[in-house]
Length: 293
Length: 105
Image 1: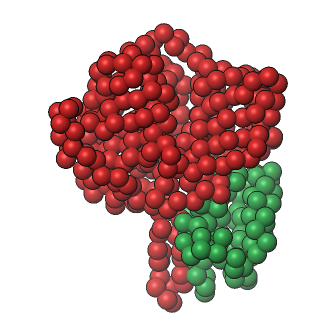
Image 2: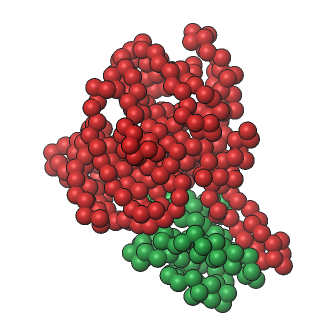
Image 3: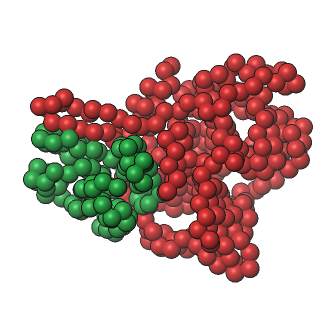
C-alpha cells in the first residue's frame, strides 16, 4: 500500500480550484503526509529489528510538542493546533488533535462551538465540569472518559470545578467518518483495576462494546503497567495504524524507547510488542484508521 | 498579512458568527457569511473570493453542488472543508492551503 497516497487521498476535499479555462480542476492539495521524523536506532538489547519500522513509524518526543501558555491554561500540542502550526505535525491518520492540558484552579474554557469532530476528553487529575447546548451538565474525573460527536454543531463550556487544585486532562480530536451527524454526548466511569498490566478498551466504533463509541474506525485502550511487564497488541483492522502516548513512566515499543508524554505512531504492522521500563507506566494506545472514509 | 476574502457557508448561525469573529481577528482577513446555497453561489459568482470555507449543517448534496460551482468561476478559489467548529484548526487549515502565509504570520 502506498501509505502517502492513501492518506493524502483520504483526507478532506480542501484545495485550490481554478476555472476550466485555465486548468480545470483542483490545482493543488497541501494536505500533510505522514513521514518519519526521527530515525529509529538499532537496539541490540531488545532484539527487535528496527528495520521492521523503517518508513512506517513516527516519533514525537515530548519536548518537541507545541506549547501554549495562556496563564490559566498550559497546553502541549502533539499536533498543530490554534497558533501552533507545524506542517510536519498535522495528524496521524484520522487523529488530528492530542492536547495535554493543565487548567488553573477555578478557570476554564467559556462557551464555544464545535462541529464535525469526535472529541474525547480523558481526565488525568482533578475534576472537569462540562456543560453543553444539549442540556448536559456533568463532572468528569480520573477514571472517566467523555465523548462528544460534534456533528452539525454543539456549544459547550468546560471548567476546572475546584478552586483549590488544578485539573489535567487529554483532549483528543478524531476526524469523523461522516460529516454533519447528529450531535451527541456521553461519559462513562471505567473500572481502572481492569487496566492493571493489561490494556483496557475505553473507546470503539461499536455502541455495544466496552467504553464509549465514536463515528470512526478507532479503538482506544489504556494500560497501567509495572516495570518489566511485556505485552503485545494486535491491530484491529487492515489499514489502521497505532499511536501510543505515554501518560507516565516509560516503555519500549518495537525497540523504540519512549519516555513520559512521548508519542509514537506505527502503521503497516499487524502486531506490536511493548515493555514497560519503569514503575507506574501508564499508556494510551490509539488504533485508528489511516484514511478518512 | 495579505488581504484574504472568505465566504463561510453553513447552517448553524452561532458557529458561522464565531468563525467570522475568529477569522477577522486577523485584520486583513474579511468574511461574508452565507446560509443558503443559491445566495452563496450568486455571491461567489459576483465577488472574487480567496477562500470558501464549508462549515457545518450542509447536506452532502449542498456540499457537492457548491464544490461543483467552484470550477465554473472565472477566478481561482481555495476550498476548506472546515472541521472542529472554532479556533482550534482554522488557522492551520488556512496555512495548509496557503503555506506562504506562515512566513507573514
